[in-house]
Length: 112
Length: 112
Image (cartoon, rainbow over all chains, first blue to last red; front, side, top):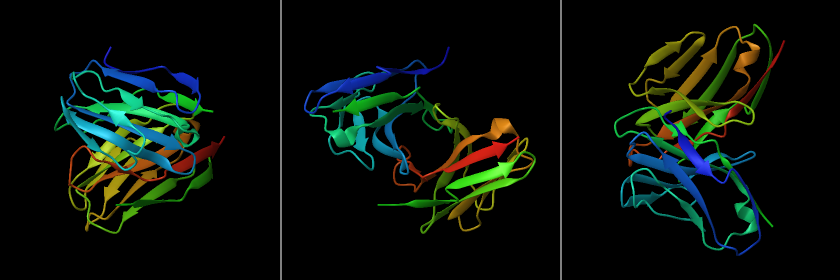
């Protein structure tokens, strides 16, 4: 089944403890993105990648890192999480030249 | 940074009534996408509009892209309870095909 998977789906952590949220797609898509969703603010793009080893900042990249070493994976790294990074995170992917962007199920993060 | 304004923020309708959400940008868009997110779910791609004045239909949903490519609308005819959710527009300004700016969404509730 074609899909975008994220792990973990739920995470509670403490300030300053490094964490990684994984994202994987099995559709051979070139484009992958990370978004955060907050009440009243909608979806905001954190980082995106147009292919392996090609990443770029979205609108809210501060406090986040990404890497794209393989086409299928696009992990989101929070080196030192803070409470203002408590949010719902979505990974998404699409094929180059394609219209449809497929979203993962989301990761709900709480930073205490 | 670029912003896209989406109105209204909320819309409550009686089943059978029509619904419209609007997105506006102060600058010309390369293209615009529309997504639907059900409560507790992830965004699901509905459509992409690219051409000036473009109109596309999906059953009871009609999508329009303005002549100046600065605004767009989604109209639902005769809403059903299955239409409940939040509808987002996502704008591409042409700089990078991977960079999308989302509107804050319109939350639709439908009374049976």
